[in-house]
Amino acid sequence: QTQLMESGGGLAQPGGSLRLSCKASGVILSVFNGSPLGWYRQAPGKERELVATFLGGGDTRYADFAKCRFTVSKDNTRRTIYLQMNSLEPEDTAVYFCHLNPYGNSQHDWGQGTQVTVSS
Image (cartoon, rainbow, N blue to C red; front, side, top):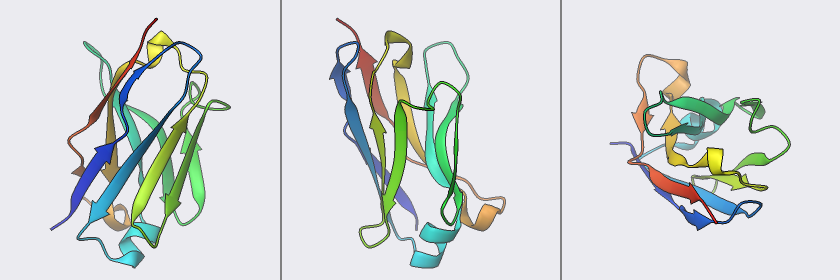
């Protein structure tokens, strides 16, 4: 059974940085490396939105707000995906979710989310 566990959220000041991690359990390497795998976020009163994701293999897609500030990376050996967030803004305050779409099929797995708050 697939489990996604996020960590690394917390409070950051505007202009600061945070690094989120998501450990995938119960996922074989071919799924981890060959499937859409990435990060979404949901702010209060707003819909969940894409932040950054691997499309399957090495290609990535970033939301416009994440380009040049956020970087998604992964460690296949550790079955862990990361989101390095720099130059944080109050508008980045949200719950950040890890997402896996095995082989791009109809199944979507989500983590429980980790809160990121950007405030002075």
